[in-house]
Image (cartoon, rainbow, N blue to C red; front, top):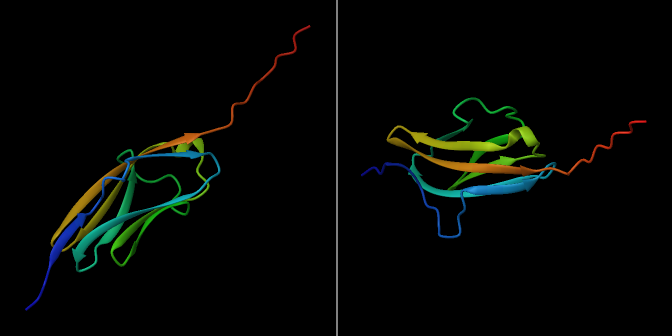
Length: 111
């Protein structure tokens, strides 16, 4: 007997679909799932390619997808869609990233 299952995220009540990070900070968000065989993962940003896939990625760790953000920058803010897919189906979750930066005050010296 063989077992097969399409990927399905198992997100509990504590899961929030919005991450708020300070510019320059990093975060790893575990996204539990069930699937067999293990799915492949991918990430899109606002429906297109991720700006910097060395800083922003998704990896599979047994029963969790790990959404990794390293040293976020203001232009990284927006919606990311994490996709898990195997031969039996696919599932997605969307996470909104808000990047807070330091307030810069520019003073004009007019004589």
